Length: 100
Image (tube, rainbow, N blue to C red; front, side):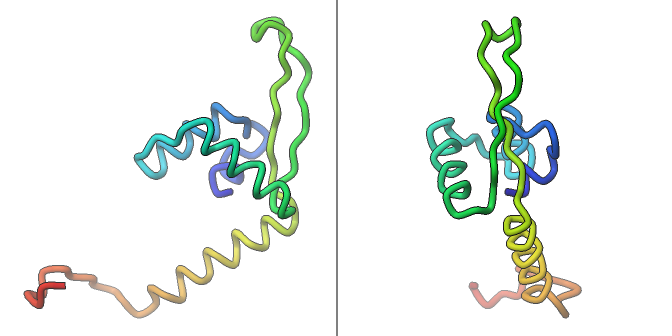
């Protein structure tokens, strides 16, 4: 959902996959991507619209995704949760020698 939010009006499959790769450093298969997009669409976090066919793509239309109000609220809530979890940790050192 963060990739969709970052891409705004240019959020379609190939671009979403590329954005995830840039953010996470991992490649997501198209099957996993479209399965996830279907799930978040069913849950009402994301909506999709069909763009106009383009001659470059052989007349196929792109499906664009955008966050719904519910999706924006969920994304904001997730962000706030992360901020709350990390609050007060100004220097995170993993070299404490305690083996964890």
